[in-house]
Image 1 (tube, rainbow, N blue to C red):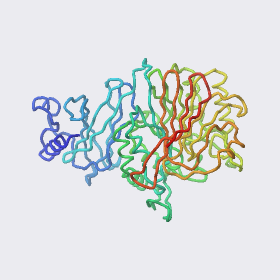
Image 2: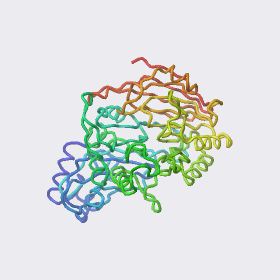
Image 3: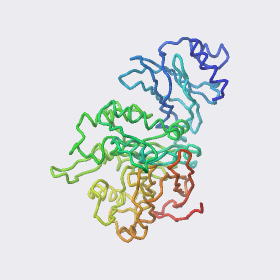
Image 4: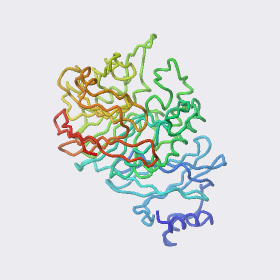
Length: 479
């Protein structure tokens, strides 16, 4: 937003007059009164999410002492807000932590939009968002994916690099917050001693994380989809045993829906799993591997997906006409053994669920399935199949962690126990870029200096996977 435009908007808000820096006649047609607006300041940034070819969800939050308030969303084709496409007035209040959220449709495919929120006395930073390609489009699609951003362990410098990229969508694969407090340690760049276990403290935790400038800039410039893992609630929770209690889990889920640009299903308030169509080039399937887990009385894993989500995923993969089928999930689907046997809190601990899903993919002959994975805190590429020793039926890309510590093991040691592992790096932090074309997928791993707020990010490995081939050529990058 130009400084002159911002001054005009702030002056209009303070005077209670017109809200748009536009000619008076056009402004009167768009905004005739201040009905529904309240006082409040936008100090938690702006965000957009869950785009389609014709709709985007827009988000912000008001800082106010009033129990009820409201804000106006203005969407434009240009960053001076002079080609207005839509205006919405959104109420808010204490019950939803003063967040404001609107799903706006009737937009054009593959189109860049700019937006701003305005209260009775303030205007937000200007945001940028882009709709996804038309369902018939075979244009290339470019994604960033990342996970596991522990506030105390480092600065979110990978997000600053991602914010500067030309992207269609950011995919966050879990552990957006870490609910548990961390005792201060000399090596920690930042402190986070807040322990979240109720609605108030979960909200405070999101506010703290969103204060990171790089994360706010990523949200401001690119639409995001998010799937939660365990730390949004509590470490390694499964089926309420031993914790958290049902009320705690509901509070954590509620705060996540409040603070992220996500729309709710009418009949299932906290449902995450859904398909996002990226033109005809790719379909993105978002999974929830926490909410529907089941274990027996001895805490032995039974199922990971739940029956309804499993049926939905298999049927959706079979029905997909896109070239690439991207399964965005929280934990590694390759059965990884680092010398202590299978980790139960992953697909490897739910082997029947893992083998069952991959068997369905193999029986149906579904080509070009790739898994994007978080949780492990390592960069890794795996070939996956229902029988791990068999020819892979899909490829898994694990995108490291934003800041959370990983296990720095020699790659050869990992591969000796897990021969399906094509690459392993547990030392570095960062994220991944993925470019999908009709004929190939190019995935680039990028590592960051997380000890500094302005830490440098550089690419260090690239993997090229031709369509129809469940393997990827590895290319080390000189940095």
